[in-house]
Image 1 (cartoon, chains in turn brown, red):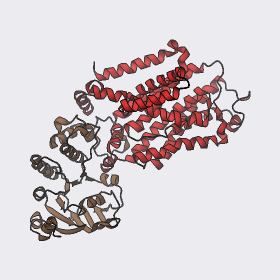
Image 2: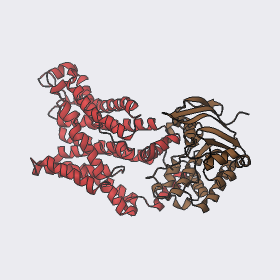
Image 3: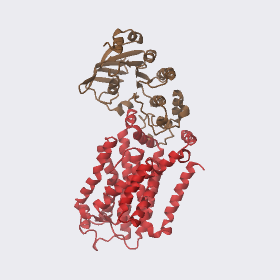
Image 4: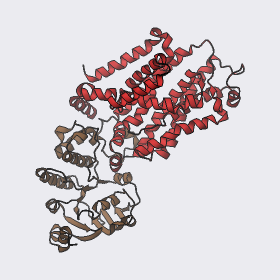
Length: 247
Length: 350
């Protein structure tokens, strides 16, 4: 079976800085994959290349068997490949409910669905998902007034209501209260299991990623250093060196 | 009383004032006509600048295009346009009888709106790919370029401008254009009120708050931006058509493409009233227009200084605008409460 996401030998340089060099990775449908690596190792660049934020210098990216490395951000999102941002992005001057309602997928409806009342579609779904991430009681607050951690949860819920096939999460637990992190891991797992969303997660928190991922890729200096099960990665001396600075 | 009934009451009060003005204040009727048109200018600017966060300094272009397109249609239905403009619209050979005048107007105003909308579509596809500030800068030159182009085009009278068709004496044009302006303002207001209640309203708000995010969530952001500009331009074009007839003479630079005055005023009115709110531009236009008329009447010679001072005061003390300030001060009274939002969501779902 072909993998859901198949990145083949992607390179990307910014001027003289080589951010990604011949990076390949595969994510199977239904999997939770992790992407780790020290700061500046090219994780976010990898994400940006996948979702079409910038063109790649060389290599190919396939999503559901379709080459997507030439597509624009919006077109890739409409295929069902969505990302969240490291610096959380929500619509600050809109309420949480409005943030959710405008994140409903518009793939099939076209323009006419935009002319329906803003209350006509997805209200119950929006409430359910806000409940799911624990923001139900804040649903009519302006998103910009939420704390950073809450905004992250909102962004996650917005991604879920969009019904993506695959979700790329850039440091979902950064800035979140440690006691909430366990809850978040649980929710990510449930989103994967119950909603069938394949996940690719960038994470610095080793405890989180080891608990969450089925398969982990480790980048260092823009190159793929290691891959394998959490157990393999934990015991890989190159990974340990990379993190402790010996690399 | 709920907020919704205040909203309804305010609309009814405005409509009553609007309909009664010809009897109450007959001598100020053409000023009032302009006030209604200014409300349209502020409302359509706010669709872009307030609701979508795209500050356009070039919206006056659509106003001017509508003005010329309307007048040209009014004439061209009955006379060769070139001969009419060559004669400076005067002379005895270009007579419009009652039915010709009304037919011309009925055809001309929609043509004015459509011409402006088509121009917005073409311009939008080119420059709405640009983001925020870059878009604002790109629109800066539009009015100047359009004014110069119009001033060099003989068919529409070039630099000497164009006289709009003179109606027969039997038509009271002051009252006619007053009601047309009022109707257009009402139509624009109701249309935008509906538009902002749809998912499209949310979509352009999303562009205002974070366009990168909207795009990453799969929105057709460029399409939505172009549609918003086309809608804005359509109503502006009709407003221009009425304004041209009201002024009776279209000068390419001082009337049609007057970026330095009308182009700036429409922005100020929206900001004064409260960007991104439905009532803000209406209130802003009212306050601004009355102040402006007072300055021009009582402070003649210093009117521009006073206006400049007003602008500074607006920006310093009311950065959110009047409605924005009220909303911040009394969020429950001037903005929707959580209960109201809950009820609206519940109703929509049913």
